Length: 259
Image (cartoon, rainbow, N blue to C red; front, side):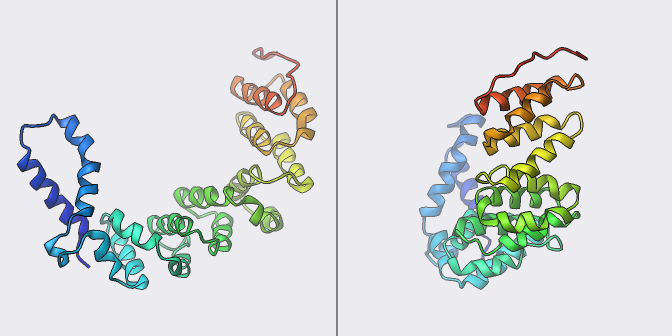
């Protein structure tokens, strides 16, 4: 396929030549997005007189996903028009799922996760759970799948509850974040409460934040008792106090160093 972003670089150079001296450097930076949008609406002779969007529309879904993979693996830029063309193809889901793996190029796997969300497919959720259970998963990929599962937390509740005990430390951390986005369930409440109680100094505030987001008022006694811990850091105490107040309670103590 033709390098559309390469064509844009030439298009933008021509724009700069035509407008030499008319704009400050900051003004030019602000114009890049607008010029890119204009480029996308302009037929290009190198594309057979088609606009970039029309150009990509002429390829099969398999060809578009293959081009995505080639460009990412070579460290080349991925045109927004290529990305958008794939995002408009629901049949791309099965191809994209195959790219979600800790053994795949991580950047490509992240692209696949984001495109699956754009396509509106839940087909990759099983793969996302596998990523969270793999302690070798890169941070970018793990965070991407966590974000997507947080948006559909109840859909994967039973699966995550069933695998939680065999997840490693990193995986549990990501899964606990997803738990915080679920509707109230006794099993999830118990898991998040245990995580809060057993969390070390410096992490207690994170789990207080999860409990506040989760929204089960039954954890208020646990949080109130936790706020009384004299070893709390100020940041931990602040987050616990916020969680108590967010759930409708009142913090009974003020923070004092080593109180």
